[in-house]
Length: 519
Image (cartoon, one colour):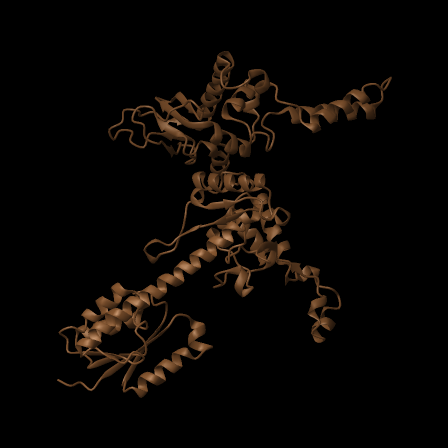
């Protein structure tokens, strides 16, 4: 039965082609001139099969709701030969005809069916050639250590290298000059004291280090700059400043900020782009060392802070004063999260509340009285005491064994330049004859600074030391007992793999030693 309905299908790859080049409009005009009574079109890549109007068109053919389909070229329905053959099968036996204007092909003839397959193969071959050219171009860029087309906020690719973006971005109200009204009237806003993109990026990093958490940092950033949530997807393109928590975390850990370039970061399997594991990226180091926002050590600390917060919760680092007993206890023992295991069934233990205002002060087996006989919980304070006892015992064992490390060097690490300078100052000032109160105060200050510098766990001093060296350095109770909450989060997570508890006691501790095997 003749339905007198002819569908013209048009497609362009990008919105720019549809609007700027009028390519879509030209296709539609030709389809109407060829007799199309209705028009369907998509603005999407021909390699994608899930285009809405393309799927709608296939459904109309299957239900025989039309008489004919017209396209201008064979690559308009699809650029995949497999998809094209599947599309052609929709016409077989349906009585719906398929016509291609540029190649003058009519599917109602045997010659037309042959030509469709031949031209479809050529269209797919053209796509493969284009993809191959793109791959060769990217490989050439990687060999020459060029900046990729995508770049993190705070940077611009200049002469194929990453450069800090010095474009003026915003002017804070607090920095606005007194003659602001006059400047605005004269439209001479270039005279305003502006913060560049690079300046703002550096400030975001500083705020993160102050807040020690992605969410807390974002709150501080938005409060400082008065920015509300927007629909902006990327800071770089639309010049609207806004971070999401995931976007901010990915940006902070981007190697470009530390002066390196990462290639092959995306996995495009099954036509879906996902981010690869960083260990699978192709790295080029020190590609722009003079354009760093952070050092390697600072970025390592950023990653450690983010990982600790993800593992233990946002309260791992005590940047805010505790307002309740429960939050104070949580921050004090936050480092224990994820480390405590049941010695009987091997499962990870959970925190449990005491009768004291519901404070989460205990750890206990999650399967207690549900198949596990380890019924007694253990206070977090007692876990810490048992952990410190095991650390001191392990230090004595390593010292007696004398293997893997030079014990003299481990217990007496090389003096830092600052320590040498402080000792020289103390020696010089000790030569002053007689007693003077200001000299004694200076001596006391120098003594205190020297002791702080000798601390084996001073900030950053443990980053490049092995687990064995750190344990041997902490060979007495006092060192472990005087660690701050933040130091505990960083140090214990590096030293300890698992703490096993049974019947209200710490039974054993599994350290991250080089010769340890997982339990």
